[in-house]
Structures are given as structure tokens and as C-alpha cells.
Image (cartoon, rainbow, N blue to C red; front, top):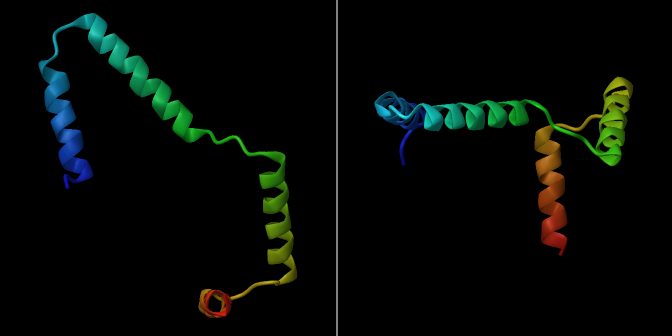
Length: 80
């Protein structure tokens, strides 16, 4: 599998060889719109509520270690 750097460098080489202005402008719009969409995530009301509940748990110290959570999950899976 190609690494991210290999893919990026391959794309750069291909872009450098393109002479068609319209194609390059369309590609620029595609890349720009994709990058903007990746930066912004819309959360549902339920997701916002869950995040607020998580913040409250943190403030109250209602925490569990990853090790304890893994153990609890294994016990739950084995009980099925």
C-alpha cells in the first residue's frame, strides 16, 4: 500500500503536467471544497447532549481507566 507521502507526491507530479486551465480550476475548487468540509462537523442535538454529559462526568470525577473498561467489556462479551 502506498504511503500518504507517495500518493501526495504522485498527485503533485500529475498536477504539474496538466496544461488545461479549466481542468486545473475545477480541481482547485474540488480540493478547496473538500478541505472546507473536513474542517467542520455538524453535531446532532443528541451528540451535543452526550458531550455535555461527558464534560459533567469529567468534572465530577466519574472516570474509569481503559484497562478497567476493557475488562468490563470482556466480561460483558463472555456473558453473551
